[in-house]
Image 1 (cartoon, rainbow, N blue to C red):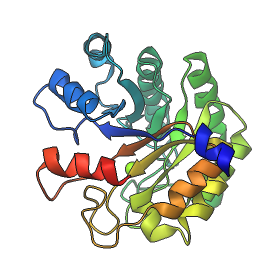
Image 2: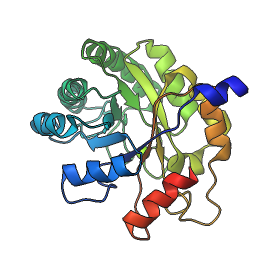
Image 3: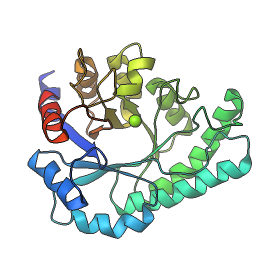
Image 4: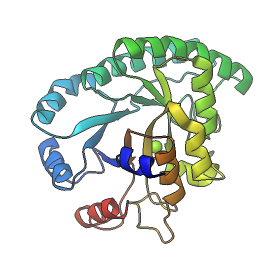
Length: 262
Ligand code: MG
């Protein structure tokens, strides 16, 4: 227990849209003055932003934590064109993610609204084949795919960290990893600790928000992350816990309060 306490850093991060500031530079100033060093940016049109972001991060302590989605199509589509669209657009984002030194890019295999999708048994098999290809491509770009389980209102296909980790195990590529999002976990997991432990070596990223309304951690009554963070210590988690949330109050007040809480 003592060893874990000494060895596991608490690396907090913010999504770009969550961070107050009217420019990238102002956002980075806010982050550094609050001791937050992981910036998560969107994957949409990321290629065109690589130089801007690289320049912005020069002489900064802030690093890119993860790239949030931005891909087109979906991997469990019954339409081969949509699957190919997802592979091609994900590869483009992976190249940018690698250039930015990101741990990975977040990918959702299929949202409920993306139809027609394959029946789940067939979908899982095809997903694994495609992830082998994407995983290899990610490794060659020194980054990874990060599978994100969502809640059932958004994506029935992948809802729990353990299931995402089992897909990673079956793909068996260092370029395919998973994450947990406390907001989705609120609705889908029986236990935060169990969920993160089941993610174990595959866990590459974490999203956090308040638990009832998806605002800043601590803004909802009863917000509690204790067992989840205990599990992150247990599995020696070294990557970022990134805010993906709205805010009820003034960002410049509620975000520092949330950082202090965590
Ligand atoms: Mg999320």
